[in-house]
Length: 272
Image 1 (cartoon, rainbow, N blue to C red):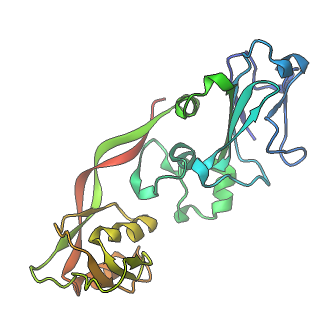
Image 2 (spheres, rainbow, N blue to C red):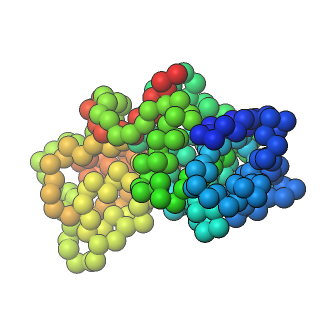
Image 3 (cartoon, rainbow, N blue to C red):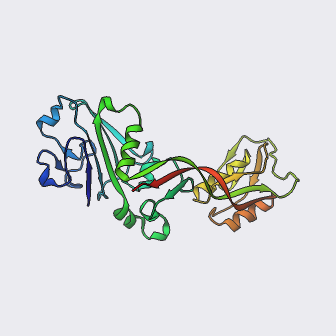
């Protein structure tokens, strides 16, 4: 497993060059509370509060990824006065988006997208993760962490990318009405409710974007101009099947067109 170390205190990636900082191998002594390095007595006391490092490794066998809560966790060591942030066995896309964006909301401006995100055409997900997933750890003085910006800046530097929300012209599914006949207006007799797949009762028509998003379809743009709540019974089993989705929508005089639109996307751009 490759180990890349980025540090302001002169630590290096080869074990022979860092006698005071020992790389802790996975499985044998893995403990989520322990940092990836074992500190000597001077580092543990951290009198001047200069102790800091960031580490990027490959996949660690037997370690569960942190999913949810922004895909990372933190631990404060009151003895050394440090705060450690860590991620385990995540794709680069999951690390940078913190799991808060669906694939359809992310645009990769990179040489090899297959290294950034998994898709089913790449075979077994477990095999892909072992080759492409990463673990990451950032340790800083408690006083140096004032927001998530320190984490984001270090991730960008470590991975050689720029990332954030930007506007791009992208493929989209444009929702339109095909007639002036109103077949979708809600009766208003039921409370707003939807399973985000087969029925949509007394909700806005743009709720259709969610199952499409979950299916990793292109982002939906609502151009119906319809402001009232709707009642839709669609019974769609596979929202990846655009033909089936369009067929279900037609009975309500709705349709999805595949066109380009300028949208806000989470863009990951390689800069090296």
